Length: 86
Image (tube, rainbow, N blue to C red):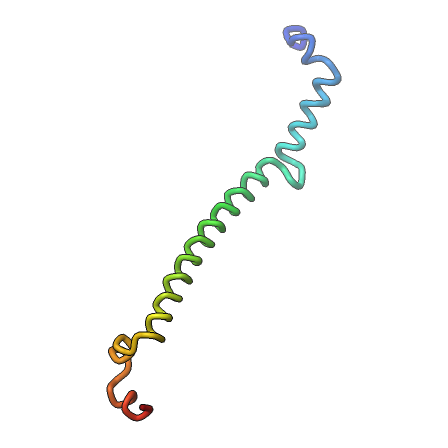
């Protein structure tokens, strides 16, 4: 069975490299599989960050509109409340 393998596969350097590669790929604490999961998680978090930044910008514009435009503010509050304070 081992006679059919090429000579470089039988080399102790190739065997050491193959063992090292398999160890890094699957068993190491920072394995390649773990790194791929981290990258996917980072991309998901970056997408959430962009979404929430857009939401914050939109809410800040609405807040600014509410603070500056009394017409919009009058639509939200009942007329009696504005008359009591003003």
